[in-house]
Image (tube, rainbow, N blue to C red; front, side):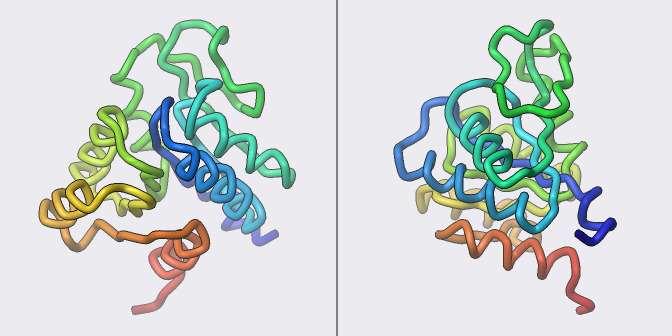
Length: 168
């Protein structure tokens, strides 16, 4: 594994109550990112996109970080290597964003939308996977040079590689 990649944190943001397809995307995305050597970060709960992405990463020996909104570990995903207990509630979304090199929004929900907005405000690239057309258009129109829209997890990896390693 390239030691420079092993220190790059990719944040996967998504709903605690997503569709089955989004859950499948989250699991696959966690696997693909871990296989590439990236650290996978989520909001850390034991539900939805967060849990599935972490589970996918751990299934292939990846490293994981969970930024927990509670001041305890009771709802923590069992797939977290490094739990960060914040007690900040939804304000922890900003920590998710600032700690990640790139944000991947897997699906869309209120919390995910807030993380996308925070990422754009922090001048971070956001890759949107599986969001509806209205959401994609809204965020693309808000900041077209920082929003990337894809339809499959493998496209996320290609997009990350282009963003991080292209010499353009």
